[in-house]
Figure: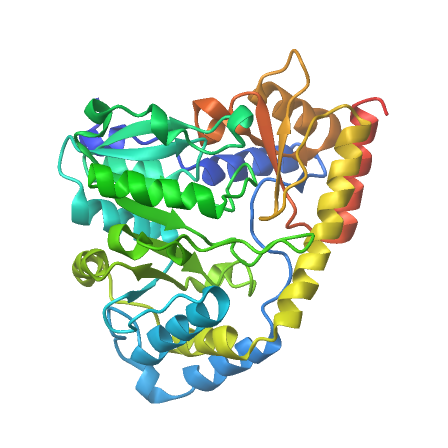
Length: 391
């Protein structure tokens, strides 16, 4: 027995997925393997120069060296509201309906701590971005899985949930465009979600960080575009993916003012806000980045998507061709588990992919491939996969 016993809630939480992947990569490299990682969704392209220039300017201003506002600069929240109006035709009050976040991981925990009591349930997609699950557990809540099945286009079947199952449910997590599956949601689906949430008295949390990463002319929706959505929920978004700012840690929660206020109360007590200079750079990103820059970024990801899809098809691995997000969700060949096929890729090709089961039990039988790898590295990885699969 260890000297310092961890809390029961912490003992329920497995090691963070990508921390474990990094350990495997380090081990392979130390054994001499030339590893190419397709596991982590971290954009490889640099943050645009005009955003960096604004950060440098703001960081050199001494007034930004003090504690920031917990909820975020008013000018940042105003920029978020303007962006949502332009992009989604969604009207937001910068004061009561916008909250600065350091990312949706933080936002998920703030939401859970604000609304989940011990024993309460959160409906969590399975497979999913794992912090939805861990945030629920850290709030002493129960995770109620919502299977995402290929037969249902990786959308949850809300009609199959009984009133008894919903009795202690407080939060419903959604994420479209989806990580890890790349699936997208329609306006009709979101209308169903709004009706479901109103009927059951459940908060909807739509995590939408891939809203700008889309292909073939597709334009992802915001949950808040649907009438009545703001009455029942909030949406998280982030500057990480469209502006290549993952390391900057800046995002937002927007929507229902009562939910935003409760999240802000938690936030005020557990962190000290986002560095002002990062917020000023984010304002520049939101207001001064041409749409053509996002289009160029998406054209790069689309070419990578097509390369991976063509390669996987050629070697007999079934994969969907996603309309959005920068992931490929692929069925492993018959006879392999998710972990088994991922191990094969590492050992025979020196390529790291993520086992689908790491995102939940319904991810078993799949792997996820990230497109956030430089073109030359991705092409090399695809050549290695062809050779490893005998093609």
